[in-house]
Image 1: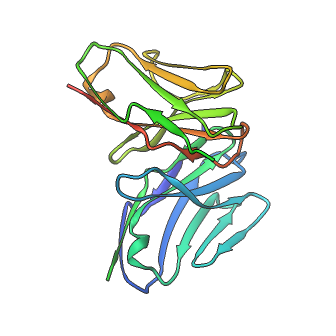
Image 2: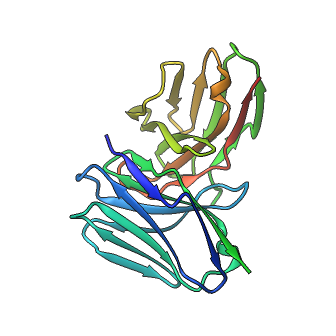
Length: 109
Length: 113
């Protein structure tokens, strides 16, 4: 089955700096790669996703890149703000969706 | 549109007991997935139901079971509870099965004493 590794497990950045979270997956059949954000005490919410026929996708300050050959994908957050502080989960799917263990991002004002 | 609703929000049980958790998906969504969330382990897949049929099952013991009703509502049951079953149980719904955006509920926090 699919296995997703996520790094780093914790990340601290200064407000305004960029943050990058990286994930690798094992199943070459996976073709859907979403990212979820979970604020403290709240439910995970989808922030961006990418499918295997696309190499990069951007939504305002958030971007995701996918390298299918190397089986890794990354989340990039630019101009970080305190409200970006949360746990971020990557996932990969050829059904069902398999999640990484999460990255706790802290944005220091 | 109402979101995914999970009940109860909190549960405290003792070892050996059994528990049933409920999930009502977003109206029109026919797929319901269940995940166990524990600190440091992320979200671990339990099972997925679509049109009352279990489509996928994760690597959990047989004490964990589930079902889906004709109105797409789903329940999961854990029998003979162990201390290690203490976790946040999240359900998520999607319109269909397979590579779909998941919408999560707020979860049921289960504590086993």
